[in-house]
Length: 70
Image (cartoon, rainbow, N blue to C red; front, side, top):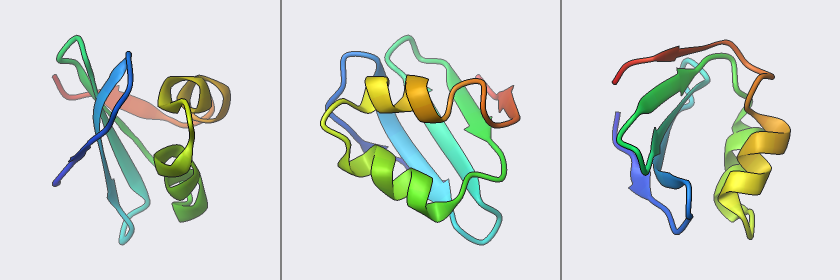
């Protein structure tokens, strides 16, 4: 999956596969997580948020099933 770099103190890049509703987040620590069944509007809102980390913590973290891939 191709991720797009973002400006954030916590998140390095974000990718999304709309065919399977999979969100991939790379953190500045180097860890990468995949979140399943994330609606496209949640991905769009994350990408348009003034604070990616705040949006992620409030709307994605602990709300979707995830797995760490790195």
